[in-house]
Length: 275
Image (cartoon, rainbow, N blue to C red; front, top):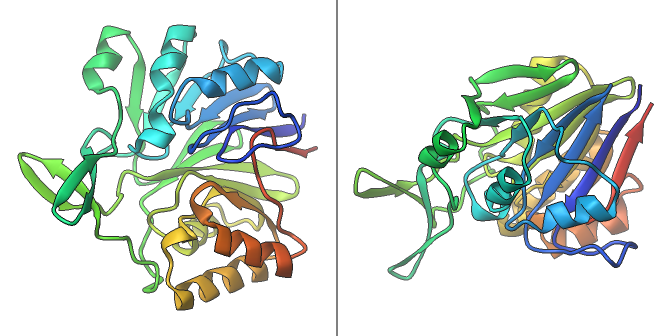
């Protein structure tokens, strides 16, 4: 059976102008009769979009949240209100309080729910272990990314508040979803704070298969000129579809659009089909 991956919401509109957009991302994954949701945007608008796209979210088996930032987990409570019997998967440290720091001021950037919300609503919950976790045949969660590319530096403005102290957020909670297809692996990323090159290297290492595509956010919006050059060269040399957007940034997307025949702007309503 075919693999079908739909972007339920993203920053930018596509051809279906009835769909809502927001700074956030959410993917609906169908694989051999199984259904997995990856990220929930910042609000419940992804549910509205699913309805417009004739996608039923009430029978999904797993919800995976890439990391604990509001624009990836903010719609989760709306999904719980919708009903269904699914298991939530996150990385370790997902519920740590996440903040942004600028000029002496902190702003909360984290989730709008905590573990007690899961208990109250009887949500099955599992923390993904470092390495590879298979959810259903051919759909994997990967976390624990070795930081081997020195140029992929996390902005120190991202902080975690834990036990009354602020520390730099290293995004050890971040996960990605990898889908095995006859064409190769499709890597689906939320924001790629640990570094898109680090993350894709890990996918290749643990699955030992070539990449067919990467879609989602790469956080190249904050890369300096040298790092951006290296990342674009890395993506273009991988001979895969490059459907990056969200936090990738206009500069990176514009460059990829002008230099790579494999690039497409993955936006609200975009779909990938692989037989």
